Structure formats: C-alpha cells, structure tokens
Image 1 (cartoon, rainbow, N blue to C red):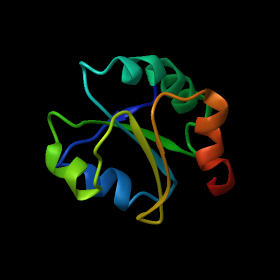
Image 2 (cartoon, rainbow, N blue to C red):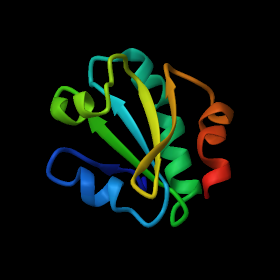
Image 3 (spheres, rainbow, N blue to C red):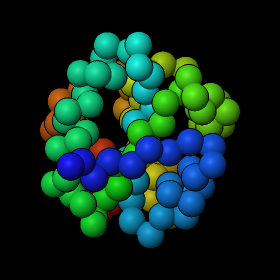
Length: 107
C-alpha cells in the first residue's frame, strides 16, 4: 500500500504547510497523461522515504483554489514544502532522479 496522501482544501494546511517533515505535492488531474506517467514514481518515492518525506497528491480539478493559491498553471507540477514554505518546484513529467533532486537536501 502506498504512503501517498490525498490533500484538498480541507486538509492542505494541516498536511502540507504545518508538516514537521518536508512534503512533495503532486498537482495533477485525472485526464493528464504526463501526470499518470509520474504517478508510479511518486508511489515508490512515498514508500521509500516514508517517515522522512510526505508525498501528497492534489487534484487541481477538485481543489482549484489551492492550485490558484500557488499559481499552478501547468500540470503535473511538483512542489516541495519545508517548514511551511515552497522550497522547490518542477513542472512536467520527469525522472525519479530529478524528483529526488528536488527534496534530497531537505530531508
């Protein structure tokens, strides 16, 4: 079972902004093919880094207000949050190495 969590407007601040460990948020949508391409990589990352990093998925179609809050204009967008602040961002489908590079120095 994956260690990913689903976030939306009701729990975003609690799970992401107030997290005591870094969080990588996957801004995605069901219809987005590149989003589906990185999905399995993020599931692996969630499992491999459990306890040191949270992997959160935010569906932009269901939580557009959160996507707008962070000026998400293209998906997939990955944002890493540490201590409540955005620390890194990557747009597009990328490799696991690139994804790990976003957070490795933060955990």
